[in-house]
Amino acid sequence: MGLHIQRKNVYSSPKYDSSFVSIPGCNGDLIVPNRRYENTQVSYSVYLSAKNSQQLADSITKIKAWLYAQPDRYHILKDSYDKRFFRYALFNSSLDIEDELNKIGVFTVSFNCKPFRYDIDGELPHSIDVVLNFPYMIFCRMDGSKPENDWSNRWNQTADLVVPSDKNMFVLNTNSWTDGYWDYYSDADKSRIYLKVNENWKKENARFALYTFISDETAWYSLEKVSEDIYRVTLPSKGETVLVNPYSFESRPLIHLNGNGTGTLTIDNENGRHEWTFNDIDEFIEIDSEKMCFYKDNTLKNDTVTGTGFPLLVRGENRFILGGGITDGSVFPRWCSL
View 1 (tube, one colour):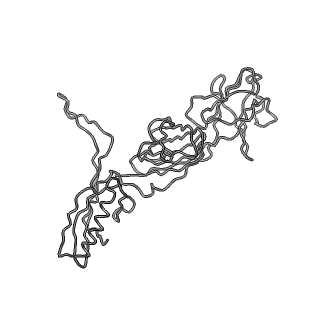
View 2 (cartoon, one colour):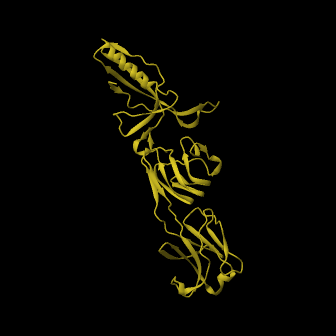
View 3 (cartoon, rainbow, N blue to C red):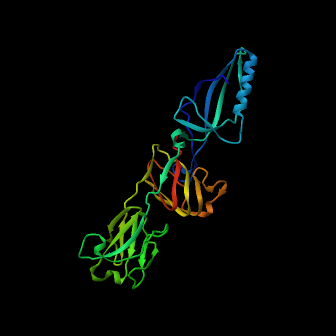
């Protein structure tokens, strides 16, 4: 279109939205924060070069068609001044173009922009996988006089077990040597598995161990005592999915999760540990923290999710833990800065 930029107000920044309330007898106004930034104006001084008045008129027609297209939504705005970032912008002002000798159209373009600049890298997907992939397991009652964990030192054992997505403690039935049921022990650490023993298992100075197996991999773990009847073991992580926010501002990611049934997403960062439980997952579910919704395709799924708010990625490390029926996913972090 032959459009050239003369200059840009590169250093424009948004205003933090807050109100001030005057209280009689109180020095200084009270600040009422609205916890948001207002839109900001980004302006460019530009010109159109043309060989004649007709060429200038044709170029102006194309420029207007570009600027006024789809005026009911934001568009991505990028320029060569700040190649690492882009903005969400809308042109919604008038356009006054000066004709200098029918050769140069000089004018200012002002865009109404969302407050943040977005890092281009933050629009790329980052894979997340199940961190704590619990294998099959067997709780064993071991000979307390022998410290080695192996089958020859085993007195009794449970059946082959798989940890349910919403339980983390196996409770032995009263007077049983093998049978029990899964329950929940109040502990935020997803890597810990608990065993509640009965009087039979506590006899003869027994100790307890966990035997895990999946495919060709096997491992033994000794349980440590938590209370009179409850023991626990911490399973090793299968790897950790960590995304690092390089900026000082929270980002509101777009997250795609694959799986079926009931599953969990946990994000652990400097603001604490936040968990969401998803029910009735059918192949996948998506989270848009910017729009504040859970959905699949065009169907809202907010009523199938429990948890507070929506995922936010703070400055520094953000650890992702998937559980239950969720197998993997991807995160578009939307890193942003002012």
